[in-house]
Image (cartoon, rainbow over all chains, first blue to last red; front, side, top):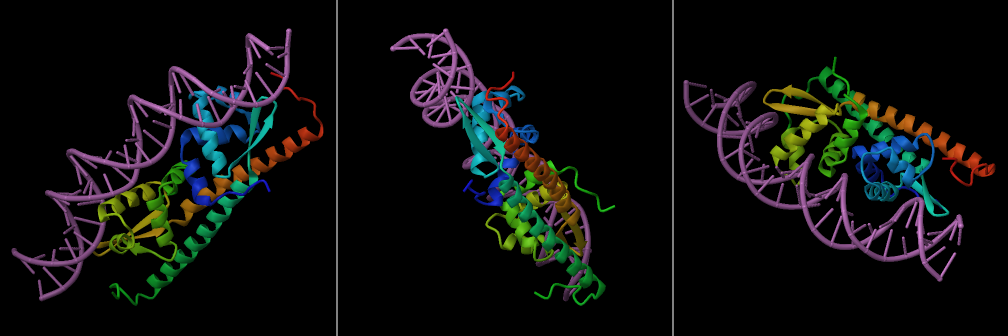
Length: 114
Length: 114
DNA sequence: GGCTTGTGTAAGTCATAACTTACCGTAAGT
DNA sequence: ACTTACGGTAAGTTATGACTTACACAAGCC
């Protein structure tokens, strides 16, 4: 029960911020505590904490308290949820693309039928 | 030369806005002109135009002028770029996850080696 | 037990971007 | 050619959210 992502849209919104993407990039290589994480960034440690909260709420990160430090890691399930969302979008995009190509092949409606 | 997406990060930022996600959702079923698009939304037509520009710049949408109206459609290549980005992230997330699981199996460093 | 280290939270400031109204250009219809 | 419909752009306002400093709390070390 490592709690799954709430919804992919929250995750997308979380990844929109450059600093948060930088955090995610830093976590690609492995889990890190907050201090280490903030050391490579240009913003203050509290700012990092706030971003970590947003990413965690979006289901993209998981915390493991280890003594006095809190180690953050990428949550594979959160990334997977995003992937599923985009896969479905990709599927529909292709279908719509094909449908429009078919419509252009048989120009039944130069005008919208209203 | 339907011009490809600039980078996945711009696309993510574009999808962060709820109104823009609503536009994308509406385009899943097929291409639409601006008027039709704005009709289903709560914001004004100019606002929709601005959002369409952002989505187009991100490589997620394509325009087809048809007479006086401009028909917008999902750009499969833009969605594909996003998918590739997330696939790579997913890959690293799994690797990091496995690495940490291995570290926990052989606890060489209860402390960070600094 | 007090001190230090590591981190999350609160309050407030400031920058960004989403939205509105007004306007302009362009393509079709009569 | 004039009118109408459609959509992009400009200018200005407002709301959102990212950042800072200051503070509070918990866990290890002496």
